[in-house]
Image (cartoon, rainbow, N blue to C red; front, side):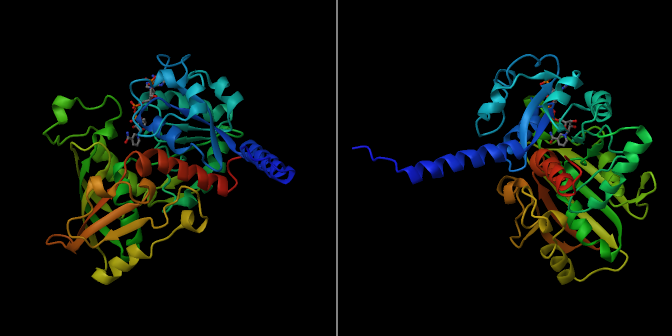
Length: 380
Ligand code: NAP
C-alpha cells in the first residue's frame, strides 16, 4: 500500500527543489568553443554537476554547427560517461558567431584547434567575454598570462593591463600551458628554492594529445614516434614564462634555467610521462626533495577550489611507478605523480613524472584556472 506523504515531507521536497533552482540560477553560464573535440568533450564531461559553472553554450566549426551537440559528437564521443542530457540537447553554434555566445554565457573555455584559436579568441575577448584557453595561439603573447594555478596565480594580475592596452572592457584572455609540461612543472617548482639551473626532459606522450582522429593507428600501434611537431620548442620555452614575473605591461621570462627536451609519441591513449634530469645551484639532499614534494600545497588547495587535487604532487615509493595506466587518474586526474627519484650521473637528480594530458593537461587544468579567476572575483 502506498504511504501517504506528510505535509512536512512535501515542504522539505519543495524547499529542496527551490534550493536546487536557486543554485542553478547562481551558477555562471559558460560556453565551450571547440566543444566537439577531444578536449571540448572533456570540458562537457567535467563540468557536469560543477558547483560554480554550467555549460550553457557549445560551438565548433561550421561542419558541426546547427546540429544538436549529441548529433555532432555521434560516433566520436570519447568519454566513458554518457553525454550530459542538457548539453546533448544544445544546438552547436558556429564559432564565428560571437554574438550567439555573448547572449548565452558569461565566459568561454576555448578548446579550439590552433588556427581557429588564433582567429577567434581575441574576437571573443574584444566582444566582452573572458576566454580561458587550451590552445597555443596566445601562450607567448606577452600580456597574456599562461597559468598553472599552483605555480603562478599572481600572473593573473596582468589582466587589467591587458584590457587597458587593448581597449577591452570586460573580456580578457588567459591560457594554460602545453599538456606535457604539467607532468613535471609542479615538482620542479617545489624545488625552485634550490636554484634550478638545467633540465633535460624526455617525454612519452599519449595519442589523445594529438586530438581526434590524431595519429593514424598504423603509425602508432607497435611503435614510438620520436617527433611531435613544435612540442620540444613548447617544452623548452613555456616553463620560462610560467616561472617569469609580471613587469608593467608584460610577463618577463625567467632566463636563468636551460631546458633541453626530447618529445615522443607512444601508444597509450591518455597520460603524458616525463623522465627528467635536473641540476641545482645548491644541490638539496634527497630528504629535502621528498619533503618539498610531499608538503607542496598552493593557492588552489588553500582556496579549496572544486577541481583542485588535495595533494598536487603525489610521490610514489614503488620503484616501478608511476605507470601511465595505473597513475594517470590519481586525484580525479588532477595530480602529478612522481617517482624514481635517484642521483643523476650527469646532472644532480633524475625522476619520472606523470599527469593526465586531457584532464590536468587540458580541460581540468583550464577549469581550475577559471575557478581561481572566480575566487579572485575576476569572473562575474
Ligand atoms: P580536436 O579533437 O581536433 O578538436 C578541435 C576542435 O576545434 C573541434 O571542436 C573542431 O570542431 C574545432 N575546430 C577545428 N577547426 C575549426 C575551425 N576552422 N573553426 C572553428 N572550429 C574549429 O583537438 P583537441 O585535442 O581537442 O585540442 C583542442 C585544443 O586544445 C588545441 O588547440 C590543442 O592544441 C589544445 N590542447 C590539446 C591537448 C590534448 O591533450 N589533446 C592538451 C592541451 C591542449 P569540429 O568538430 O566541428 O571540427
